[in-house]
Amino acid sequence: MRVKKGRQSWVENRKRKKEKEKRSVFFRMAFYFLLIAFAGVTVYIFMFSPFLQINYVELRGVEELEYEKVSKELSCLLDGKYLGFISRNNFILISERKIKNHLTEKFKKISEVEVEKKFPDTVKVRIVERKSLLLWCSGGPCYIIDEKGRAYSGADFESPEIKENNLIRLEDASAKPVNLGEKVLGEDYINFILELTEEIKKEALADISGEYQTACRAAEDVRIKTAAGWDIYFSSKVPAKQSARTLKTFLEKEMGEEKRKNLEYVDLRVENKVYYKFKDLGENKND
Image (cartoon, rainbow, N blue to C red; front, side):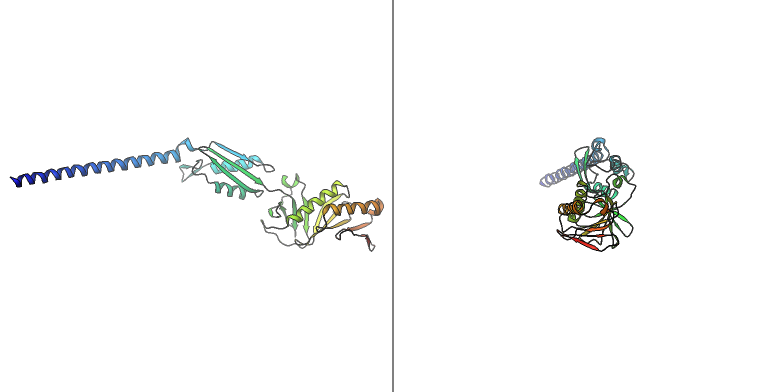
């Protein structure tokens, strides 16, 4: 009797164990099914659903560049699909770094790009344009120099950037080759050139032809040719305003219109001194 009862208990335990295993398998299968379904729905929402499609692109900071061209490049980044079926126009997949690299590579005039994504469908892009300050010509080719003294682009003399900005053209007499992106001039020297040009124009000291020349990058001097044919030599060691005042005083007191016609150059590179030379004559000094 005890043997039968024990065998019956063993059978019941085994049956309960099998039922428990079946329930465990069922729950595991149900869990994995729900997990896969959740993953599928998540992938659909984030990759294929219109919920995270970019509907608004805000572009700011465009000044001298053509807004339509920059905007078009942004649109190109959002067009098309990855692997032929995943839309690029997706909030999750848009890369801030990719936008920055693409715009700075496409437009050399852009120095900085800030990208901000606003959930769920907005991208804000702000660019900072380089200031085109002057043209640096060395051995033939010319380059546009920005406010930091870097040659960021080759000069296209038909482009609006050059035509509309009336950039100063500075010739390097040493003809040293230039690499794009290279720092060619110091910022202090650039500011000196710009300030000097403004002072000469403001005081109507001379009609400048637009021809500027320096011996080399390291030189602190600059030669400016006037429309009348005579040259003016300046040094960045002497403040621009002081040089302009000295030139004004010299021209008003020493050089009438008739005398100026025979001038070859006026040298202001020594502070508080003026050296000048007439054509076919020797050099003179004015203290």
